[in-house]
Image (cartoon, rainbow, N blue to C red):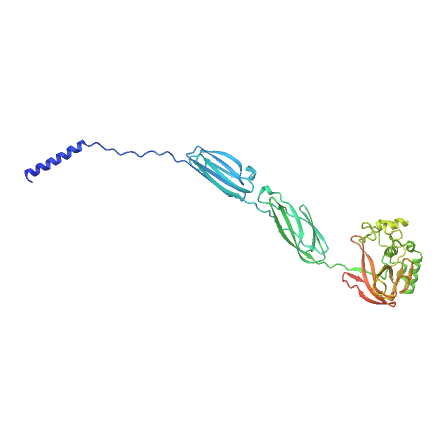
Length: 437
């Protein structure tokens, strides 16, 4: 390098140093300090079907206000303070017992100044339930059972206790009577499966229905014995000892001669049916405290209202009397006559009969009695016409289980010119009807 070049280099170096010595010194600035961030958080969720599990946390916030609404109505307000450096500042499980938490739509509103959080939770309206698996619902036909129903329950505690409100048959095979938790089931003659419906709950808590099944078990029942040839209430009765129809007819007439039914005047209070029934009562000793379903012979269900007087007015008032029940000791039944073909208009009449011959199914073996004239009659005599569309022979028997008189229809005849033709006989399997002596 020449002298001049070296000189220039030295001058440049010196100038640079001099300039640097006159520049101010530079220091790095610190970032500004930001204030702590404020925050609020909450959570609310359904717990154990009917509870609400809640928690709230505050960060750099001294306090917040919690409002709880149910179905749009404010139900509680609580102040929450920042008490934990970390974790929840407030926790609670809202329950029915502690907080009155019931079914409904809940809104939790947590607020602090301009900070706000909202959460919603619904507690459902559950339907009631019941456990019916251990019920024994089988029963015999024509019988009844009483069972205690299990108490139903509801998840919503405010809807307990749960009540039964109705019970009804779904197939007509049973009759149901509900009294609280007690259910009486009465079966009819149908057998096999049966169904019924239970309803329980309330309008507020919800109604639930349960269909239950049972079995009606068929029972082999003893047949109803009907023997119109024998006076069964006294095996030693005279009529049971006689051996032919003539002798029996003579005894029947003798008994009628000593009877008094014919002395009761016919009126709007006493007709042929009353006379015929009174003759049956005077002939058969059915027993004390006998009941009947026929309103013609009682004002309640006790036969003749229990009247045992022979006074005419009391006989009228009570439709008859038990004063001489069974006195004649005759197996006497009821005759119903109906005709619409042989006479003007309708003809009907009630009288009595006794099976004095050998066959129930032969009209000539039947002795007809006109109680209003206390005598035996034949077709064409008194009010027993020679021609009649229907002659129905019926017989009373006693149902021992309830002491009721029941009437069984045995045979039907048609009369043409005094000759009877059998047109029907009772072959109902419930009965064992003796049709031949």
